[in-house]
Length: 368
Image: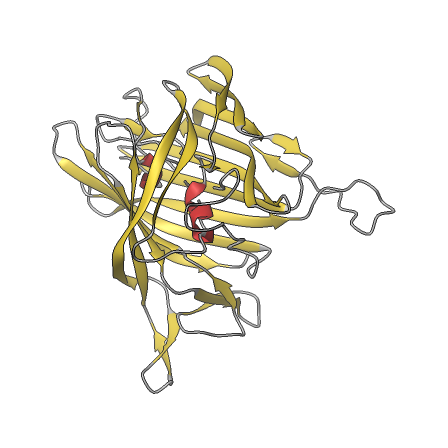
């Protein structure tokens, strides 16, 4: 079962040992699972907020990325159900969390004093102001539990560009035992990484051309595109680090029109044609229908991603116990731009039958 953020899978496929079943994964690496397991290695994660993420110079061909979460600090969480067409019902859950952090400052006499440092992949960094994107995919198949975790810390801005990837991490576990992990740090136009797979370690550097995104979380960065539209298309680079491949690849995101995703399993408020407020038990969101594909040819097809056309508005209730959602303009609520609503990842099973893994948004929360 290829899990999580298929969109990243966009086509960089890596084969995993059969003992590591799911094809789960967040990032642009295709995780092919189910009996024949091909894992989509970290490419976003995209998501939430994905999360997922940022281009090196953060400039696309149509415009510059913006801080997509500036009106929603300090915390956002997006939860998705995960289903595989080869199985009945939901088999897992994917959670994408975006957390804002102030710059680390150890000077107690400074007005910007902040002794809290960010922890990513078990290591501590002395961060500049920015966001930590953390994604977790949990699934259980045939009595075996699989967990995929990806994290990336993004510097808010360098003065001219937004959402610059700084530190990245990914781990994969089966029944609680880790079989793959990767930690990396971005420096200018390269990623320095260390990976451990099946007990063996390897380190190296991958050069990247601009614009580039972090492979673990780029789907969330894409929410910051300022020129999203029905004819939008652009290419970017990302580093793929898996047990079998350590390289830079080119991905292309293309918008193919709009489509309404209905019956999302969370309540919301909207307005009718007369401007009257309507309470909805389920939610429908108008989305950009986008495809993500890899420039090189590999087994598989492009992933499909659905980003909302209009912002989703969210706020905590007065008790601080629940998050209220509105699909109509509401200046009393935070504006969440281009929310990632659904991801569809096609794959062929062991018998070469076409299948797909679908990630569908089921909750938005502003409560840690």
